[in-house]
Amino acid sequence: MNKEEALKFYDEYNEKCNAYRLALSTIHFDMSTIAPKAGNDYCVKMMAILSGELFDYSTHKENMNKIIEMSHMDLGEVMNKEIKLVLKELNRLSLLPRDFYINMQETYSKGMVIWKDAKEKNDYQLFKPILKEIVSITKQAYTYYGVKKSLYDDMLDDYETGMTIEKYESFFKVIKERLVPFVKKLNNKGQHIDDSLLHQLFSQEKQIKVMDILKEYMGFNPNKCYLGVSEHPFTSDFSLHDVRITTKYTEDSLASSIFSIIHEYGHALYDLQVNEKLEGLNVSRLMTSGMHESQSRFLENYIGRRKSFWINNYPKVQDIFKNELQNVTLDEFIEMINVSKLSLIRTEADELTYPLHILIRYELEKEMINGNIDFDVLDEMWNNKYEEYLGIRPESASVGILQDIHWSSGDFGYFPTYALGSAFGAQFLEAMKKDIDIDKALENNHFNEIENWLKEHIHQYGALLNAEEIFDKVCHQAFDPNIYIDYLIDKYSKLYHL
Image (cartoon, rainbow, N blue to C red; front, side, top):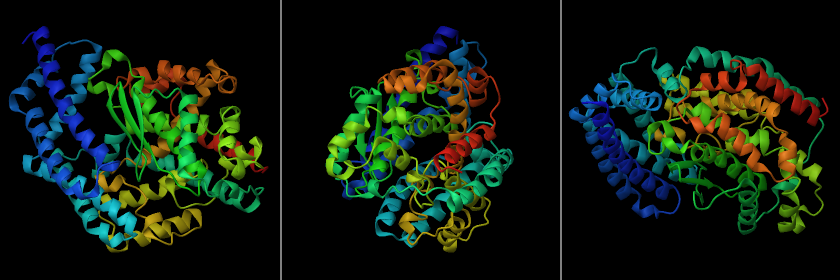
């Protein structure tokens, strides 16, 4: 097989794999947003069949042999990376028995359905059996793969290449030693900020109008991006020209939907701004979770909570909620959206305490995978961790252990990347400041300057560059979590007059 024949084969092979993925992504998105509940069981079965078909085709011996042959050829920088990424996944996938793989996919799909029902019913006992099953089948999959370090080390590496328990322990040690005491100091000595006016009744109908304002300001292209509603906000990338995001409307919390859409649009931008030449390739979609979360958290916090972001947007929001916000000045609004309070819900947590929510999940998840958790009391362990780190205790499972969707789909190793991505963002902010006047751009409605910088320095590469390479190229220094902690302590010391 010469180079021309190899590339022709791969085009056909990859396009068929993408067709299966598109069908599966569409069903998943619909099930999470608009599909009637009564059809969930049927959809789960159909997804299992499609997953089996994808498994058979992608791991077919003839196809595998050709891709292995391609891995020994010089196909150029992009295709060399593409084949390396694909072969890593296929080498794993091919180690799984077909029936096991289909059962695993069906278990994950079923898990998400049961999780949603359990959350609505506030019933951890309803979710517990499937959670045990999900943990068990995920661990079994890794035994087929062949564990290189430790089980959880391998899971962490899957979501952020090169990350290990040792590295995360070092990262979270900085958070424990510097951030935990600062949070306690702030709550004991900081000036009180009253954000109660953002927790009045804000109708969903009017919140949707706020979303329209934000979409227009951020250059949301309806021909390429779609906004839906789901129980847990998420982003699905279908192609470089089709990314779908969701938000959740909470009528007693205006900030919830606002920062949900900004966060998810950060994910969407990353997917939409990958170089067009990578369309359809796996290098256009397999960015690590830490890098992806760095982009969503970057827009949400480092950009979306700045006063300059709201100078032109807040008057429009105020006009929609005339009665609710008529006595709230711009400066008061900025204080309110940056308020730090000890809270239970991760997705609505403030910028300062957010990493503590992740720390809790990391510690529980690590012990869960290591087999040191009694599922009968896992919900109580969750509650105890919240009391230990945040000084508050969940009164129900829905705002406790059932609040996140990740474990229901077997995403073990994902949670830590939320905190890691937040920390990455602090250094990207410093790099951006050297090139553009961020506040001037935002004040002048030039959000595109932010987008363009991110595209040029990060987004265009997709998965061609890993986090370490991005840091070398953009920040000209290695990742340092203290830059993140310095940023948080400085910002909140000023905000709370400490």
